[in-house]
Image (tube, rainbow, N blue to C red; front, side):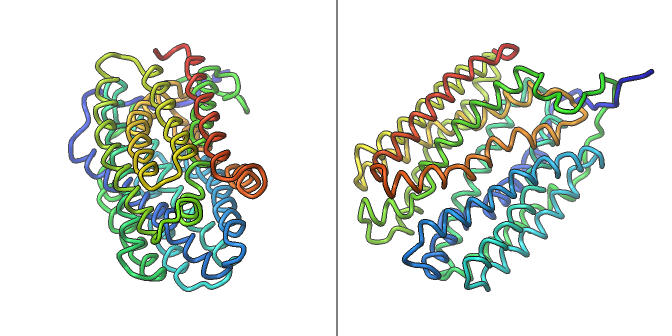
Length: 399
């Protein structure tokens, strides 16, 4: 009996500049859809609806949305694997996600915000699943650090642009609409572009739960989860940290300024880190050092609760996350168990990005309320990040 299944390998040759540009534009658009709300709009909207319980309400909104995101990403990835194409899933997710964002502008209850943000998360994960899987589909291993750098660059542009759009409109409603338009328009070039043909070969069929038997896949997943958990804990209440701990007069403007500082710092390392990692043929040491640097930013927020301290922490976080996001993505694409299931497997990898968003509110809310407030919260975030950085060396097949 033939127990093999069809898989696909990356076509030989390089990757075209126009593809990288379209890919980066679509990635930036998706992150506008995520981070315009996450950085500013949801916090403002929830505060207007429930000013006395804003922390708990925001935790509910972001936690439920992240839970849906965690479930949706592997499913969209598996569906795009079966279809053999990524573009339609990017376009469909952009249209549905943009519609949900526009609808968020009209609701005035916490339940309504929870429901529509969940729809937006589900839809935007269709985009992200298709974009993530497109990299191992189209990019040779020795170029994935560089393309991972562009992936991280685009994410930063999206975070920055989303935050700016959320503020520039002047109101929560106009901010949502602006983000919705960018999500749809920015995704079109990639979604409509002709995809390079992937080459089918044969590989042994994988049994259910077979991912758990792929040691390096697991040990690539765990550090990513821990580093992202530390980051999620640190960033969840940034708006309220600036407002209530640092006493910034305009916390929304403060978030935007810190995002700008973070973005500039990130751009200094995101491409350099990826290219350097390609050239020296190493991934783990870059991921470890970057994780430690990111944790140092959380320590700064804990021990230096001033505006100056927050600015320095944002710069340190950007330097660390720049190298981390490009090199770690390249690392995980090199330990995927089955090339024919890249979308699904990368969906499982992306759970390491979304599960922390589910857990962060449960971890952060009691710490802020009862266990020492923001200083303790940021020290916890740093400890979790350092643990993740150290565990990356458990990966054996990638240096």
